Length: 193
Image (cartoon, rainbow, N blue to C red; front, side, top):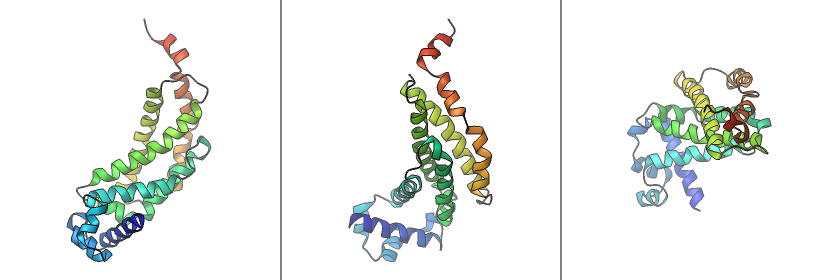
């Protein structure tokens, strides 16, 4: 029942975002649209931004199911673009409101989840510190999210597949190369005295 109510609140929020900006939507608006009382809203979420974040995480989870391997990273990134595009009014409205940071947090979490899976897979059998694997995933995360935010800022006009096709040659082999540079058995010997 709890998930059903949360999803109904998400649908109401997305419906309302088609009519007015996020900063003009109240909890009363969402509760009324959803056919519940305010207290029911507060039972599930502390505020509207909590609902926005939950909605983003739900969309992210669905978008990346089974797409966290080196062989499927392109499909995973494409799924991220498609999830954002499918929620264009929601994302654009949140992005252009006071909660732009929510979109960035959503994209960072989503992208890191995909990339750390790829990095872990490619690092299998290598001696690499966890903080180095995280650093590599973070590096690619920031690059990808930068591309994605630029795409959102420009109205999501470019075709996602075109962006992925341009990104592919940059990423192909580079994660393995980065991992090789951070191998503890070779990294220690390369450090200056």
